[in-house]
Image 1: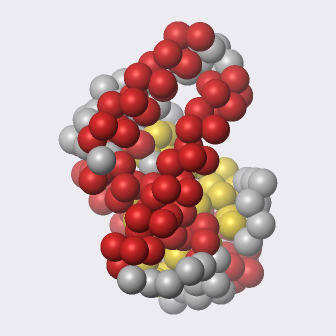
Image 2: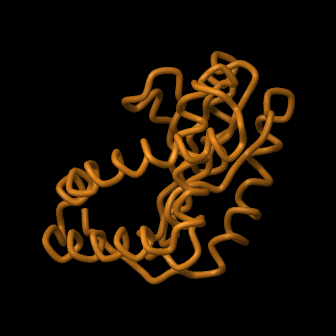
Length: 176
């Protein structure tokens, strides 16, 4: 798969808002909240053209019972897709959408995603470094999405740990 990075686009927030409406309807009795996460949620950060959303629900098993509702909106069900207690759905297109669904008891995963986004929003020097890393990796792995992703992993992991500590301190939520 080709690794295509594009400059930050303020439209991404509107695309999240529009695409989250049917997701909210599908998850109506289960949904606690839905968030725009990932690179497209960070102003100034280049990204692959894919909006990542994280939905937090009351009961993850109940999501399995409504998979066909996601499919009717063009989403492909990917199951846990490597993360325990997550349900992952994707819809591919010129602008793709990924939904990461966690239940309320998956605190570490929920906070990890929110902290990463909020930390980058508050630290432009890390955004600049991350952007340059992504551009470098896209040039190095122009047709190898897995290589590109592996190349980002160590940096993402280091930022996530720093971001979680920052987030916990900022919101005084204690350890998770």
